[in-house]
Each structure stands twice: as structure tokens, then as C-alpha cells.
Length: 74
Image 1 (cartoon, rainbow, N blue to C red):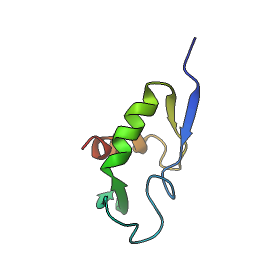
Image 2: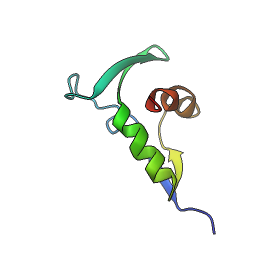
Image 3: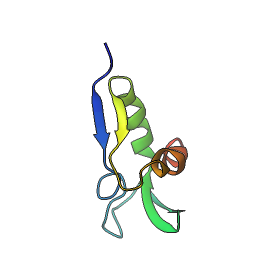
């Protein structure tokens, strides 16, 4: 039986919209945009991937796994 799908949004969820979200977020430049990412999200996503098929639900389309996932692996 296939894993259930879990749709992940990036902007406003993994990349908070507030300019200073607090400790644990680092600024990255991806595709010409400043993106705030937390390394904690990488471990959470890896844990979720054990149960769910992760699907990027974002306007970033195919750029999400190519550009965000390497930064979340840190």
C-alpha cells in the first residue's frame, strides 16, 4: 500500500514571512530570493518521510527539492 500524501507549503510555513522569526533560522539566497530556513525542519521532514510521501505544494514547483532540500539536510 502506498504512503499517504503530505502536501508541504514553503512560504509562510517552512520559510516564515516575518523578517526575524527567532533563533534557529538562517538566511539563504535561492533563485534570487532571500529564504529563511531552519535546520530543525530537515530532521522533521526526514521523520515525516518515513510515514508520508512528501509533496511540495508551492509555486516554487520543481525548484523546491532542488534548492531547499540540500539546505534542510544540514
